[in-house]
Picture 1: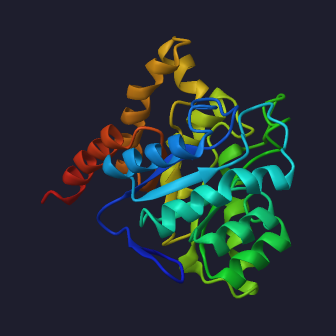
Picture 2 (picture 1 turned 90 degrees about the horizontal axis):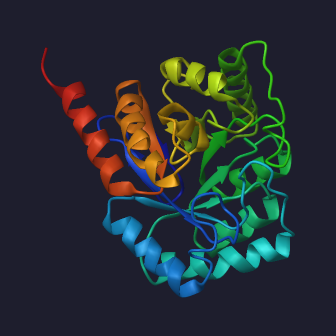
Length: 279
């Protein structure tokens, strides 16, 4: 199970990898405003890397529930200097978290090598950017948009819809000469899903991605964890996140998008020790 771009290849057959979340926004749900300055963002990227994140996932537009889109020039101003610094001066591998083709193109030209698209490559222009850049991509499922996605989300069967969406996008990418090895798939926990939907998805993880393609899990500190542990404190969502990293690794997930790499890395490696143990 390889996940490849023109410049990187990740072998996910035995060990998973972590994306460290770096939101250079004033309003993201977990860390909005903390890393809005250039210096703070670079410092946090170094910390994420030191704690085990192989990829730094840079986002310049909040996708929290209820968030409105920001103008493309604003998003570009937020992310491009950081990406250039991280890639060309810090030597880090960077993904760009965006749903705008113009931002994706500019970020990949600035040195990012992975496109994390919360809109799931639905936009033909985004697929064109991906094909021409030869980047890797994360295809995420979302119902609606961040501004509306939590307004009574509904599915006949959430698992079947995600599975069908992934296979349809994979087929469309193949038709447009995007290699399957470039794609990883994220079911979009919390993106147009309620608590019941999230639990159904987590129960069905192995069946979701197209055969042979890596599954991405992004549950870090999300609000449904607070509901499950009956706490409104953001701090109390860390260890439920770690628990789900171990569980999801046992259930086939290979890529984890997290705010706190080290404990999640340890959880994944413990799970992998069980997976590799002789019978």
